[in-house]
Image (cartoon, rainbow, N blue to C red; front, side):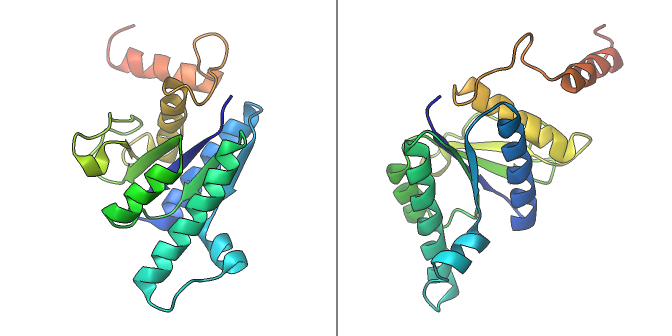
Length: 182
């Protein structure tokens, strides 16, 4: 498989990092080469950047993007959990990272729990997928939705059979029973 970068954003950096780590575990279980590129570690190891907070955040995002670009072009699935700054920086990162998948985590009813919405239609969101961490699916549903999205985009190989882990298949069957389909 070719490398790619998954960039998670959301209302809480801690939540984005938690989901990123869980996606990393899911991809490692599939035998993929995966690396989490955390902003805290980048700031600690590569420098904090300028004194101005906005400039420091932008510098960190560029550094995270640079590391992700190097990893992904060498066949690694790079996962970042950093706020994507203003549109010009977002466009700069999109231009630099060839196979970039942006996922915005939402904690409210703005998105359906455990699903990945199609990218938006405006220029700023043309590559951003929205995944909810609210509701009964919570983080587990968000992780499943992100992995399914990566499968659909061809970045992650599906698993044999129906493409679901046994526990996921049971959860789907239970949901279908609750809805009266089976």
